[in-house]
Image (tube, rainbow, N blue to C red; front, side):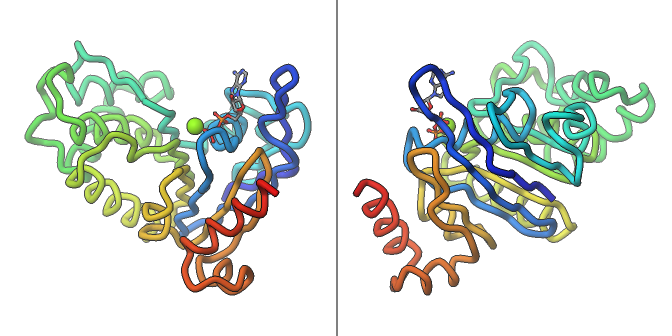
Amino acid sequence: MIEAQRLEKHFGAVTAVREVSLRAPDARITGLLGPNGAGKSTTLRMLYTVLVPDRGDALIDGHSAVHAPLAARARLGVLPHGAGIYPNLTARENILYFGALQGLGAAARRARAAELLKLLEMEEFADRPARGFSQGERLRTALARALVHRPRNLVLDEPTNGLDVMAVRALRRLLQQLRDAGHCVLFSSHVMQEVSALCDEVVVIAHGRVLEQGTPEEIRARTGSGSLEEAFVRLIATAEG
Ligand code: ADP
Ligand code: MG
C-alpha cells in the first residue's frame, strides 16, 4: 500500500504539489488523473524517492520515503516517464542487469528473468537487442525490469503515452493480473478514458491539489455527474474558478 501524507513541493516560485494526500491500496489499480502540469509526475517522484518533499511524507508498506528511502524503494517497482531501456542489451540482459542492481545473486536473477519473460510473453524476443524493439516490446522490457525484485507496489508514470492500441491492451491485462495477485498498482494519466477503463480507485489532481478521490462511482455521485468524464470536467472547471 502507498500512502501520501500532505506532500508539498515547490520549484522556485512554482508550487508543483500542495498538500497532496492519497491512498493506493493493495489489490487495487489506482489512477492519478489530471491535466498536463497538474503535479502528477512530481507527486510520483516523491513517492518513489527520487525527489525529496519540502513537506509531508509518503509511506510505502509503512516505510517512510523521507526517513527510510532504501526500505521504501525496495518495495517499489517503478516505470518512470519515458522509461529508457539499454538498446545494446537484449530484453533478457536488461532484466538481468536490473536484477544485479537490486542485489539479486546470479542464479536468482537468471531464474527471475526466465519467469518474467514467460509471464510477460516475451520469450519470442528475449534474446534480441532492444534497439529494434516495437513500442510494446520496449514497454514489456521496462515493466519486467521494474518487477525484477518482486515489489509489492508498482508505480507507473503515464505508461500508455505513445503506445499503439495492442500495446495498451497488453498493458491493461498485465496491470489487472498484478492487481488480482494482490499488488498495489498506481499509475498516472491525463487521459480520462484510460483511467475509467482500468481503475478501481481514482485520484483527481489539478494545480498541484487533490480535488477528489474514491471509486469512479463515488466520484460520480459526489459531483452529481452522469459519468466519470462529466465529473472530471466539472472538477477541473471548478478548480480553474
Ligand atoms: P504533470 O506530470 O501532471 O504534467 P508535473 O509534476 O510534471 O505535472 O509538473 C507540475 C508543475 O511543476 C508544472 O508547472 C511544472 O512546470 C513544474 N515543474 C515540474 N518539475 C519541475 C522542475 N524540475 N523545475 C521547475 N518546475 C518544475
Ligand atoms: Mg508528468
